[in-house]
Length: 456
Image 1 (cartoon, rainbow, N blue to C red):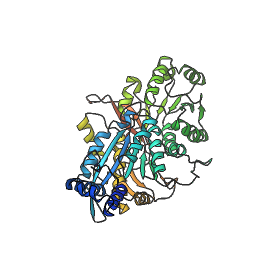
Image 2 (image 1 turned 30 degrees about the vertical axis):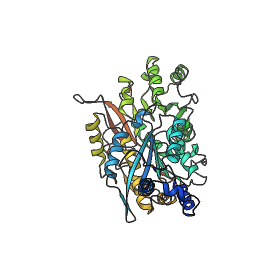
Image 3 (image 1 turned 180 degrees about the vertical axis):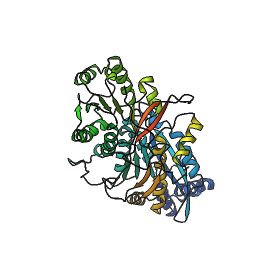
Image 4 (image 1 turned 135 degrees about the vertical axis):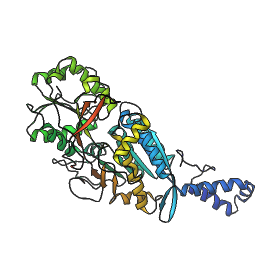
């Protein structure tokens, strides 16, 4: 399997090829056709045949830019997928070769939209996959829905994905607009964050005053509208200085307000550079000394992000959407979560990155949907197969045919968030940090390894 699509040497799509062939047979261009070298005709036919026998999957993620931590393990995951696809996929009695074209969205919506359009229009992908943050996923999903190309995405709170695509939510947080036809999503949502946070926060006594830094972006606005009321309903006081702009450099006004209000819990959903700037300023101005629980999301998910703030990263609490201790495996590769984490550490000399499980899950879903379609070259058949697809992945079962809280809309499967805390690694460890599972309210099958300890 290669990383590049095979193009028709004649530069013609199928309809153009047939039109010109028909004209030649009619005699209008007979002389020209007869003068064409035999090898050129064979090349065009071979190209069309090869395209019909090759499944092309486009994969978009942030390999560079502010959200590059999410893309950190993707080259490794793609290598695992390539190995699994090396012998092709047998579907409907026919074996198809599989090409994966991976593109860097550069953590930028415009770039994400551009590469998605290129994959659709130039590479003629049969299926699109996209992951990590609304800035990447939403433009890809939007392009796929408009073009009629099946697309599966993950690692964006499902409310942010739904709302950004033009969907609506009731005042109870339930999707109430029609389902989309071509795009499907599996990821955690606000109820999953709430389940983890409320259970974790019980473990440390506080005054229940929560300082929130929710940005003016798709994640921040969805969290403000959905998570805020849940926390308030559970007896927590939300201290919200208002949405801030990504890239803000001075957080003194917010820090001063949090200190004056006596907040003992901190919660944020920022891009990684913003958290690093904020948390260092919070330490310099004395806020971190009064914080007993520092709960972060979107950043603080990966060891590299937590390492960026040095010792200030010890005892930060976060959420885990996959980890090496999760008791699930990839249906495509057969690799367990434990083996996935260990293999990555051995190959890359890095702490296991939780995006490993989610990215590999995309390929599990892709393979299962393509097989279930009966004809992977029929985009409508692939999209239709996703409606009821149920596949095992490293993040657990992804089942669009289910009912209940884990299926808030026909196009959405909600996956778990597990509570973790970053601790200083034990003496002799090759890494500075270790993540410890401290709560499994959202999925009791994941083993708990410790209790949440106060940040300061």
